[in-house]
Image (tube, rainbow, N blue to C red; front, side, top):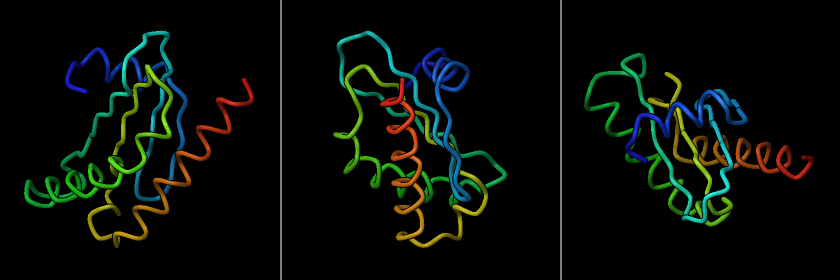
Length: 109
Protein backbone atom coordinates (compact mmCIF):
# COMPACT_ATOMS: atom_id res chain seq x y z
CA UNK A 1 0.00 0.00 0.00
CA UNK A 2 1.45 3.33 -1.02
CA UNK A 3 -1.36 5.84 -1.44
CA UNK A 4 -2.25 8.01 1.52
CA UNK A 5 -5.96 7.69 0.84
CA UNK A 6 -5.72 3.89 1.18
CA UNK A 7 -4.04 4.31 4.57
CA UNK A 8 -6.62 6.81 5.78
CA UNK A 9 -9.53 4.68 4.52
CA UNK A 10 -8.27 1.65 6.44
CA UNK A 11 -7.54 3.61 9.62
CA UNK A 12 -10.67 5.77 9.69
CA UNK A 13 -13.28 3.34 8.35
CA UNK A 14 -11.83 -0.07 9.12
CA UNK A 15 -12.06 -2.39 12.08
CA UNK A 16 -9.30 -2.10 14.68
CA UNK A 17 -7.55 -4.71 16.81
CA UNK A 18 -4.79 -3.74 19.22
CA UNK A 19 -2.09 -5.71 20.96
CA UNK A 20 0.82 -4.45 23.09
CA UNK A 21 3.31 -4.38 20.19
CA UNK A 22 1.04 -3.44 17.29
CA UNK A 23 -2.36 -2.27 16.12
CA UNK A 24 -4.11 -3.52 12.98
CA UNK A 25 -6.69 -1.60 10.96
CA UNK A 26 -8.63 -3.66 8.39
CA UNK A 27 -11.06 -2.31 5.82
CA UNK A 28 -12.81 -4.67 3.43
CA UNK A 29 -13.66 -3.17 0.06
CA UNK A 30 -15.78 -4.41 -2.82
CA UNK A 31 -12.86 -4.21 -5.24
CA UNK A 32 -11.62 -7.44 -6.77
CA UNK A 33 -7.90 -7.09 -6.18
CA UNK A 34 -5.31 -8.76 -3.99
CA UNK A 35 -5.09 -7.56 -0.39
CA UNK A 36 -2.90 -4.51 0.19
CA UNK A 37 -0.85 -4.00 3.35
CA UNK A 38 0.80 -0.85 4.64
CA UNK A 39 3.05 -0.27 7.63
CA UNK A 40 3.28 2.67 10.02
CA UNK A 41 6.31 2.84 12.30
CA UNK A 42 6.58 6.23 14.00
CA UNK A 43 9.56 7.90 15.62
CA UNK A 44 8.15 6.85 18.99
CA UNK A 45 9.38 3.33 18.15
CA UNK A 46 12.98 4.48 17.78
CA UNK A 47 15.53 5.95 15.43
CA UNK A 48 15.65 5.28 11.69
CA UNK A 49 17.64 2.05 12.01
CA UNK A 50 15.26 0.65 14.63
CA UNK A 51 12.16 1.71 12.68
CA UNK A 52 13.42 0.06 9.50
CA UNK A 53 14.28 -3.12 11.38
CA UNK A 54 10.79 -3.26 12.91
CA UNK A 55 9.22 -2.63 9.50
CA UNK A 56 11.27 -5.43 7.89
CA UNK A 57 10.32 -7.85 10.67
CA UNK A 58 6.62 -6.99 10.37
CA UNK A 59 6.72 -7.24 6.58
CA UNK A 60 8.26 -10.72 6.87
CA UNK A 61 5.56 -11.85 9.32
CA UNK A 62 2.69 -10.44 7.24
CA UNK A 63 4.02 -12.05 4.05
CA UNK A 64 3.22 -15.51 5.46
CA UNK A 65 -0.23 -14.46 6.66
CA UNK A 66 -1.52 -12.41 3.73
CA UNK A 67 -3.39 -15.43 2.34
CA UNK A 68 -5.73 -15.15 5.35
CA UNK A 69 -7.01 -11.77 4.12
CA UNK A 70 -10.00 -11.60 1.76
CA UNK A 71 -9.61 -10.05 -1.68
CA UNK A 72 -9.94 -6.28 -1.68
CA UNK A 73 -8.68 -5.91 1.89
CA UNK A 74 -6.77 -2.86 3.07
CA UNK A 75 -4.65 -3.68 6.12
CA UNK A 76 -2.56 -1.15 8.04
CA UNK A 77 -0.07 -2.52 10.58
CA UNK A 78 0.96 0.16 13.07
CA UNK A 79 3.88 -0.65 15.36
CA UNK A 80 3.80 0.44 18.99
CA UNK A 81 7.04 1.35 20.85
CA UNK A 82 7.34 -2.11 22.52
CA UNK A 83 7.75 -3.62 19.01
CA UNK A 84 11.33 -2.34 18.93
CA UNK A 85 12.45 -4.69 21.71
CA UNK A 86 9.97 -7.52 21.16
CA UNK A 87 11.20 -10.95 20.16
CA UNK A 88 10.13 -12.43 16.83
CA UNK A 89 7.80 -14.89 18.56
CA UNK A 90 6.04 -12.10 20.45
CA UNK A 91 5.47 -10.04 17.29
CA UNK A 92 4.15 -13.14 15.51
CA UNK A 93 1.81 -14.00 18.39
CA UNK A 94 0.47 -10.44 18.60
CA UNK A 95 -0.05 -10.31 14.83
CA UNK A 96 -1.89 -13.65 14.82
CA UNK A 97 -4.07 -12.63 17.76
CA UNK A 98 -5.02 -9.33 16.14
CA UNK A 99 -5.76 -10.99 12.77
CA UNK A 100 -7.90 -13.63 14.50
CA UNK A 101 -9.82 -10.92 16.33
CA UNK A 102 -10.47 -9.00 13.11
CA UNK A 103 -11.56 -12.12 11.21
CA UNK A 104 -14.00 -13.07 13.99
CA UNK A 105 -15.45 -9.56 13.84
CA UNK A 106 -15.91 -9.77 10.08
CA UNK A 107 -17.60 -13.18 10.34
CA UNK A 108 -20.14 -11.76 12.80
CA UNK A 109 -21.25 -9.10 10.29
